Length: 424
Image (cartoon, rainbow, N blue to C red):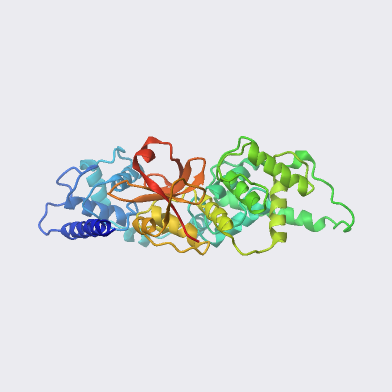
């Protein structure tokens, strides 16, 4: 233990020392005197990153002297927008374009007179575009509207526009013969509002049947099939999680595959709740699950329920980008992601991967909810994810963001350190 602590202290000391040694040196050659590309280490890289940051292309929390993958992506984005060869190499043409605009900034543009109509159209357009990774109350309102229309099937609404919301928007756009981008632009949001208004108006005009009169069943042709045998993805994870919480899905692992076990669970739920037993999840089935969840009420969380909710929280965040040091839905690093999804269930974990390794209990074989640790860029535990069953784990990868990976892949096998269990 002492040796491990000393090793971590040495690594941290070396890192901080490197940061201090990377401080700007007055009198260096000016930016543009040399070609910069992936792998370059030079003070010019720091100046390059500063210019890209000012222009909105470099989003890392600090500038460095190292030209890595984040810098290359920022350069390529800049080149793409400015009609340059997109190679991620900062040569003469890219330098010229960078420096040409760096002295203009945005102020001269702000002084140009703009017609009132242009201002209105521009502001309206920017205010009415919601897309992947957008956060805020507008996202929750969109999810509520899409849930009313039968397209958003996640078990709760949030203020985060993730992959599930994107898919719900895309399905709505397809149903309305709009361009299926998954981005809620002004035209899509306007159509959502019209459909919601029409549905509410129709509901208001429909007389309420007497209590003893059974409601007419919805013809199969009006049903929207959401999930069925063979489906894959985060929505399957959510379905299994909800059915497990209600006691219908009894398989020990949550997976992202709709197989025979999931089908039997759906059939059991349908049978016990007066629905046609088809094993297919439609909007009627989803609505019934929500209704049963509400009647069940709030109960104290057991360890199993916490684990289920943690997996659900993770699935909700699929697609959130990676951000070094990130701890919010704007971007996560690997430990920030794990800490966030457990904290939502009242389980407090330490901030770093090494600390989580030290404060959890080792187990020989992983079960759903356990933490799997890897040795990646440095000695000792430096990356982790949460095991979701079927040899899969969800994590925030530096090149993928929040995603699901397979422990059987050679890359992860070669770097696997062990499995630890959170004590709660």
